Length: 625
Image (cartoon, rainbow, N blue to C red):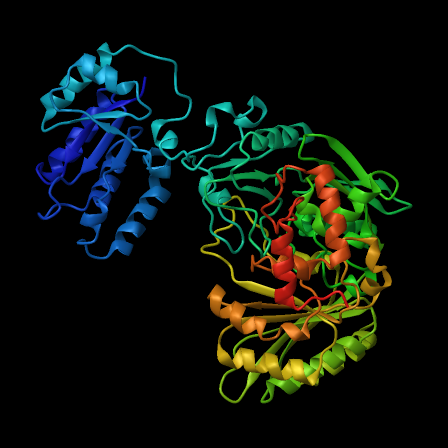
C-alpha cells in the first residue's frame, strides 16, 4: 500500500495553520504532506521556504512541493533561485523530499471528499495518494480512512526515495548481495556518489560491490539493462568524466581497496581497483618502493592502471601500465579471468591502454621499483614572451636525465607577462644533484617562487587531497583536449601562445615523456604512442569553442591520451589507437564483449559501420599510401 497523505494549498491557508496541519498529519500516522500553490498569480508564501519550516517542525513525514507548470514557470521571477531553493532543501532534508525523476508523477491527487474505496483504488498505482485539506478535521478524516485501507507488503525504501527512481531500471531486481550498499537518487548518500572530480552526474543507480562475486552480480544486473549508460568507477577522478552519467548505471569499485605485498624479493604487490595512489604510496614507502602514478594522489588505481599513467616517475620507470604484471577481470558475460603475459595474453595487451572497454578490473599485480628520498620542486617563473618560455621549457625537459621529470602548467597570460608554474621530481637524495637538475627550469624566466625539498614519494602524493566521505562534487561537463607532441618546436610554442592569448582555454599542461616510456616497444601494449616528447592537455569552458581552437593545432600532434580527452567525436578513437591497434582491439572486443556492454568510455565498437569509419578516415586525411 502506498502512503496516504494530505495536500495543503498555501494560497488559501494561513501559514501557521499550514505548518500545524503538517504536524498533525505526522502525529496521525500519515505518510506525506504536499505543499501547493493553487493560484500562482496571487501572493503566497514560497513553498520551498514553507517546506523547510515544516521539515523543522516534523521528524519523519515525507514532503512534496508542487512544481509550477512550464507556462506558470515562465511568469515566475528568478527561476534559478527556485532551483537553488530546491537544491538547498534537498541537502537539508533529501531523504524526505519526493521528486519527479523521469517525469513520473511523485504523487496522485484525490478529491477532497474521496472515500476509502476510491482512495484504495488510487493507491494501487505507483505513487502515494494525497487528499486536499483545509483544517484539522480534514486531516483526522484522512487518517481514519488511511486506517481502513487494506495493508500490503512494505515497499522497502520510503516514498521520497522511490519517487526519484529513474525509468528503465529494475530497482526491485537489484541482487541481494548489492542491495545493502546500492545508492538510488533519493538515498542520503546519493550526493556523494552522483558526480566525479570534474563532471556533474545524475545516475539512476550506483552499485557498490565489495567483492569479486559482487562485481559479477553488478555486471549481470547491467546486462539486463543493455540500453542504459554504464559507467565503471574506481576513484572518480578521471578528467574525461565517463564514470558517471544521466539516468544510467554506475558500478563503483571504490570499496575494493586492499594493498598486499606478495613477494618482497620481486617487489610484487597486489592492489584493489578502488585504492588511491596516495594509499599505495604510503603502503610501499616503508619498503623503499614506489609506483609511478600520475600527478595526484587521490586518483583511483583502476582507471589509471588501464589507461596509461603518465606521472613524475614515468621517464625513469615507464608508464604505470608498464609496471603491471597481471590483472584480474570480470568480463561482460560474468566470466572471471586473470590476464598476464602467460595467461590470456591478448587480453593483457588490450587492458594496458584500452581496459575500460573489456571488463571490470578487480585486482592488479604490479612490480614496484626502488625509490628512496627524492627532490620535490615547485617553481614559478614569469616571462614576457610566452612562446619563448614554452620553447625553453621543452628544451630543458627533453634534455633532462631520466631521473628528472618536471610538469608545466600555465593559463591565459596577463598583459605583458605570463606565469609558468612547474612541479616535479628529481629521483636523487643529493642536494647538489637536485639543484643541478632544476637550474635549467628556474632559468626559463624570472624566478618568482620556489619550493624545493628533500622528501619521499608518499609525502609528495600525500599533499594532494583524497576524496572523502562527501565524494566528488563536479558540476556540468568538463571540456578537456589532449594530444601527444612529438617534439617542442618553435611553431608549436607560437601556436599555443596564440591559443592562450585568445582566452579559449584557461588551463594548459605539458607532461614530459620519453625515457623509459620509449623503451617499451609500441606493439607491447594497446597504449601505442611511445615516442612523443610530451603529453599535452588543454581545458576550456565551451566544448565547441575549445574544439575549434584545438583543431587548429592538430597538425602538431601524433595521437591523443583518452584519459584527458572529452571530445566524443569518432575521430578521437582513431587518434588514440593507430589503425592496426584499433583493428586488433575490435577483434578482441568481438571475442570478449560482443554485445558492447562496456561502451561508455570511448567506445571500441566490435561491429563498426565501415562507411562511418571511412568517413572518419577521410576527415583525418588518411590514405593507403
